[in-house]
Length: 344
Image (cartoon, rainbow, N blue to C red):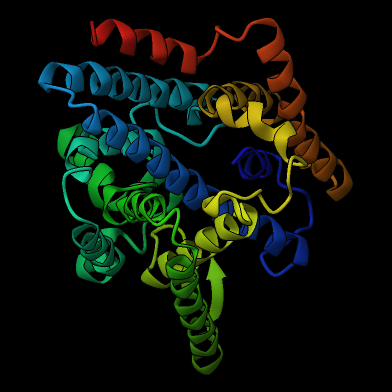
């Protein structure tokens, strides 16, 4: 997500929607959020399931959930302020976003661990179909600034539930997908069958685009796959790719073997453990860049690409350095401390 956010703040001069570079950037960007939300759902569900098996009572659940909800809402507010539209950014200060979605998922976690796999599968299918059920309320014609702006509680609630950037309907689809991937962790064959069906559906969406003379994928507008608002084909295709990537990287790990790449990806582990801290911190950098670049001409392709790659990759050594020097100083550490206090 660092890459796509950086590319949005530093779009290169002369790159149109149809340019191959724009397609590659959009492909990475389009998959970043689904992967982020799915993995968050996977991790949150696993943690909640462990606590449920330990027999946590009501106060234990409150002590675990409340710090997460509060911290996620606060981080969303911080992100909105750091990259505010008044300073060349992309968000209104009160905008609900992906972190408020995760906060809602945290509230749902005690329920999700108590309902069956088939019930969660049905709920996921319902969320997949929700773009059709919501219809025009999803705001197909809304501009970006309409989607990130809200007036009053009713406006905020609408952005949060069905027509914001990451509304509950349909984005809870990825949380539910994460719970199912967790439960099927040792059943690689079942996941492979799901991926195969998803790839078949993906092929169908490509043929639909060809037959109807439409763009296959756009961030928004007239296309089979759209991100804002998330269309049903986008949910199917992105969910399939998420499951496929996770399966490919897993290798034989689910059955007690080794990951596909062995230890070669272990250098990324500190980044994974600091995902929330990096998510919020990179907006501080981009907020400063947005202020500096406001009113300035766009960078050239090489400059924009270099800046985007540098800002994306620099968090890898920074995360490693953080763990070696100040490992307890992070949002994750703060959440852990508050959770321990709440469970006492």
